[in-house]
Length: 156
Length: 156
DNA sequence: CAGCAATCAATTGCGAACAATTAAATGTGA
DNA sequence: TCACATTTAATTGTTCGCAATTGATTGCTG
Image 1: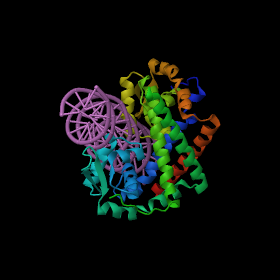
Image 2: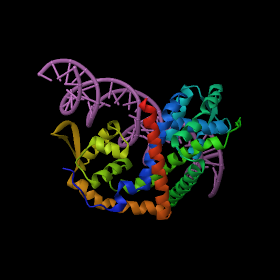
Image 3: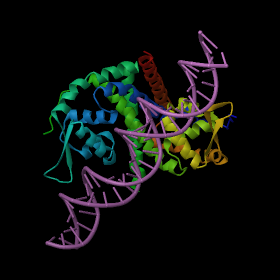
Image 4: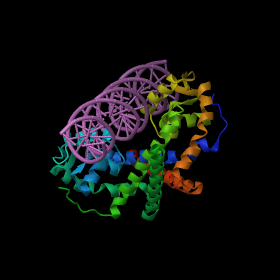
């Protein structure tokens, strides 16, 4: 069976930067899972909590801009956080279109339990801080260029 | 409202590198989308096709190992590719537990149309090939260490 | 060879992720 | 002011991604 097909090097899985990013994201997710299970959070929920721990009372849109997510993702996610009593969702009285997200006391308290997470991630990555820093900077630069390319193509 | 909470910058790197990977993966996905729409594929489906174009007639498990995905993800995805007449799914007569995935003529023909995709991605990334290569290698090394850490922790 | 463990795919249930649409509130220009 | 565009969330429908379970096949061990 197992037919071979002529290989265009650019179409080889191992040569694709995107697959490296994609598979690394999943690997991170799997490392985070047991850590976040103890907090009762998924990874995207954890990201939202990180944003709120930096300063809450934000409209959904602001959270979305920070995380590159839209309301179709955030609305149900935030409702789950509300059910878990970690956040409150209230209409902005000055602009009834906005829903402001703020932390409950439980949501604030969870920050303490979350403090051990980044260290555990660093340990699992088994990588020096400068090296990780370099990779992080390359990736954010790449992401910003990709998003810029999207802006351009959707502009007209 | 908008309370500020103090944060340790060094410790946050674990969070930051992961978010960089996570958000870059989504940015890539959004860039791929219009390109893959023309092929009638989603990004994960495209990955499966990349594997099969390198050599088909593989059991589901082998595809999963290449892509770090399990049958819960692959089974429905492969059924959609079958409905789209890009692949065939047949039980292995020598081991009836396995389902072998092979390309249909249409599936093979699609490789030709896919050849323009990597170049478009390269353009959107607005990045030199050696630079991308370096980032890719760092990421795959990081991914492999993360997966190794998972192996260790699940071993006992 | 009989019983039992291991392997493999499929299934179920839940939580993202996003496109496309809807609905309400706000802002703007004639 | 009134019509109309813009902004903001929510909703709907499709596809991933994974944990946990199921069912069938195979392999192994006594």
